Amino acid sequence: MNQQEVRVRFAPSPTGGLHIGGVRTALYNYLFAKKHNGKFIIRIEDTDQKRFVPGAEEYIYEALEWLGLLPDESPKVGGPYGPYRQSERKAMYRQYVEQLIEKGHAYYAFDTEEELEAMRERLVAAKSKNPSYNAISRMSMKNSLTLPPEEVKARIEAGEPYVIRMKVPHKKEIRFKDHIRGWVVVHASALDDKVLLKSDGMPTYHLANIVDDHLMKITHVIRGEEWLPSAPIHVLLYEFFGWQPPEFAHLPLILRPDGNGKLSKRVADQLGFPIFPLTWTDQEGNVSVGYRERGFLPEAIINFLALLGWHPSDNRELFTLEELIQEFSLERITKSGARFDFEKAKWFNQQYLRQKSGEELLPFFFEGLEQAKVGISTDDIAKEKAIRICELMKERITFPKDIWEEASFFFVAPAAFDEQAVAKRWNEQAARLLKTYAEKLQTTDAPDGTAMEQLLGKLAEAEGVKVGKVMPALRLALTGQMAGPDLVEIMNILGKEEVVKRLLYALETLGVPAKS
Image (tube, rainbow, N blue to C red; front, side):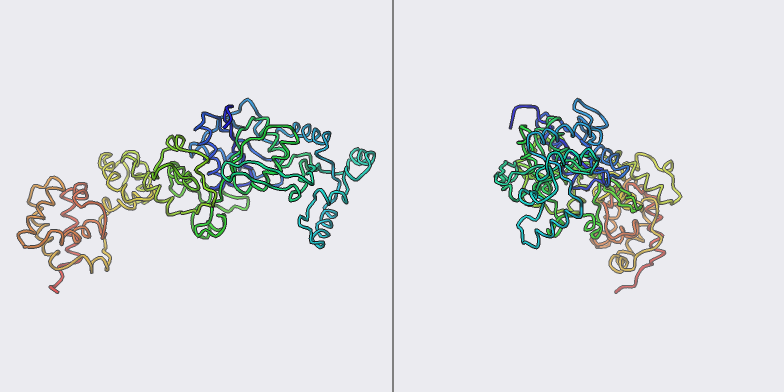
């Protein structure tokens, strides 16, 4: 690696919601920059004004801020190499493309859409290996390489529409080293003369990208594999300008869960998981729910995406952002595509929720309580009790909203019992013992769950019954569920009075079955 300051950029186009693949690209750029004490830059590439979507740029900032990927330089925070929005740099691109014309590396082209289509049809009919505007076909087209200089000047002065194309040499081998793929070699005959400046005076991606990366002193270009075919064009442009190119790293695709092709919004919609970090509403009013709104924690998404195509030096799976920075390297990014596993994303969310304290989970618990509208306000619940419940339930949740759903039985006693659960859990032996237990409990000092459990154990022992045989029926009576957290903790939180009340209701509702 060169010794100059590492500078990387994430350069999205504001054409819609930020795809989860774009988030991973931003993350890898961020990790690499911070690993090497460098700068992480956001540049907005809005040269394609036809595809510009209002609100998309703000969405990008909000998504990255939610994830904690804060830039050192951007249109929002500024910096020494601004402006950082390409539409605001329009004037400077012209001078660079004119340099290429002067050096013989670019030319004016006046071809109409109809003429371009006719050219393509001719080349396809002739079974050309590269049916495009290239070193061979350009010589039969209407451009400054085939027209007399006076005519070119006259057409420009008359205001005739034109584009400026790069002049790709016919016989040249283009080589560059990619951090992930090794040496990449492409023959120029496989390339076409890309448009550098459009008829509206706006630069294309190829020109603006190269000029901006050079002027912003970008040292490493870390981007998606879909840009790999453009890399030889970019390497050529660096050569034409006489500039040192940055180092390249083209990231593997994020694949569908079955591995058959690239992950897309359509596939994500079909399979029922988000493709955007935050909820996005498109111009037709279609709403795509984001990971944040589905209940994912930002640290879970960061951890999940980091391991989607990159592996650490050991078998660990859980990393803080700071730990990822210390561990990250381009050399451990895989060449092959990474399958997107939504269940794994949920697993990461579970792990990070378990790391939260009960107090940190309180807002989610109270939010669920308010939405449930069960006639209980947050003021009715002691904070200490709510914290204990959150601590108890966090092992059982995937999303924050699950806390209330899992813990609602603490506040809403079972009114009815599932027939299947009753058939499995409620039997004559257990019901008779619980009847005796409820009666004894009313006249016994049992200040906590442990004391209540000990009383049940003594009664079971006296009856010659294993207490474990009774516990499923007790759980059903207290919670209405077949599974859940530790019963001692449940009784601790409910208290003796509520335990007795629920036991008596279950016995009244379900009765004592006849001996089978």
